[in-house]
Length: 114
Image 1 (cartoon, rainbow, N blue to C red):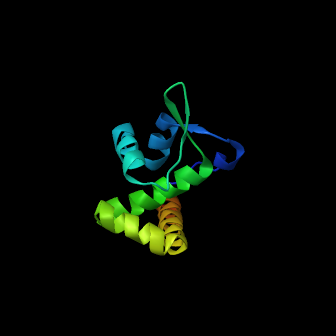
Image 2 (cartoon, rainbow, N blue to C red; image 1 turned 90 degrees about the horizontal axis):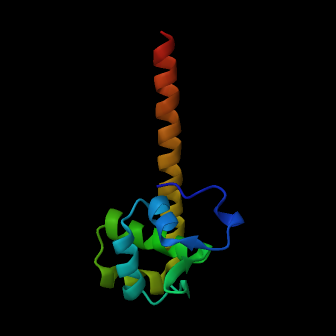
Image 3 (cartoon, helix red, strand yellow; image 1 turned 30 degrees about the vertical axis):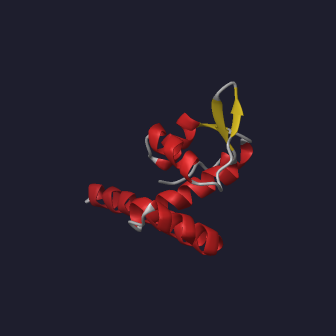
């Protein structure tokens, strides 16, 4: 679930782009948008436009709900009480997955040489 490396270059993301980045259905993002007050996407003719900060918050929500198996109420509370801790944990897990994937690719490449 790595976020795009060039995400900081863009100011707004469509719901489809966010769904692809976070590997979530668009319907889940729409639902979470209504459930979490910390999200504030811009609307332009009924289309949501998410900022970099919105994407980070959605990543944190995904981490809490999908990976930590928290309820929405629990995730809401955690985001209010310790948002920086959640963000650091989610980023660390994401980065570790990227490293694991890179290592597996290297392993496959070396196995292919023998």
